[in-house]
Length: 162
Image 1 (cartoon, rainbow, N blue to C red):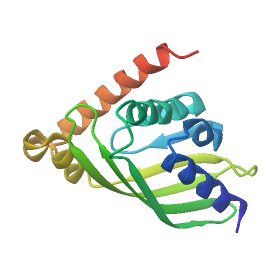
Image 2: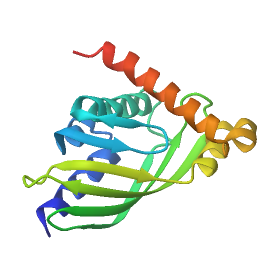
Image 3: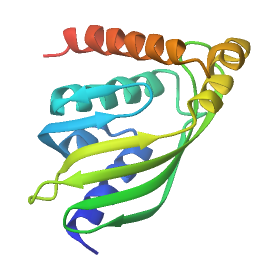
Image 4: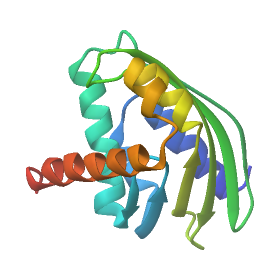
């Protein structure tokens, strides 16, 4: 197994266990992360996002939390994985099953340099937000609002962390 494949396996195994410290340690200092909800730069922001999400899940109890991953492949420069998260969305308390395709690039040291997650935002919004997600989830302005809100939430979270 290539070292970068080992990094991804370690990352997703830690995610399944809600171990944000191990997840953050898989990223390069200047890593970039992008998905429909977040666009982040640097290990502090990326690791902070994972800490925030793991802390929120732990605080609700883990009864609804499950992460599955498969099809982990990586070579010297790129990687990909399929993962599925089952959780209760903090804001609405609605159960979500999100299906994600991830792509990565790596540093020569085997750390994640870039991480891009793609998923069907409208599908996610219908599950997480109910009627509001059905009506608004497909609209670009709603996606921009969601990104602004997640940025604000992460900024507040990080302000309380050393």
